[in-house]
Length: 79
Image (cartoon, rainbow, N blue to C red; front, side, top):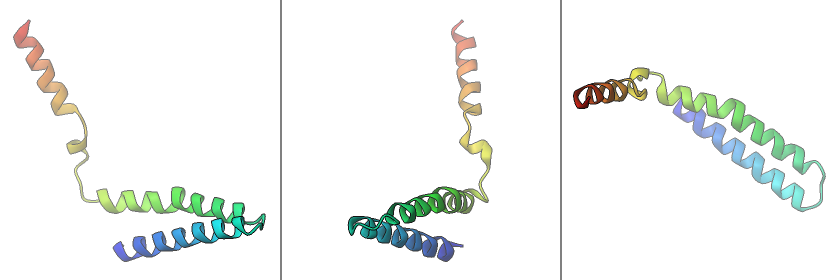
């Protein structure tokens, strides 16, 4: 998965670079190529990256439930 993400990132950066190059040379298709690169980055790469990073993690570690409970206990003690 790590290799796939790295390959996809290089491919997207290459597409964006090619799009900016063609846009600077005056080709109107450069903006379309840049747009495709951004869409792939947003809707393909980012979900795969997020899934790869958090697939074996406990979601409860990333919420504020424990902090909220501690704050409520602290407020009860001070009241």
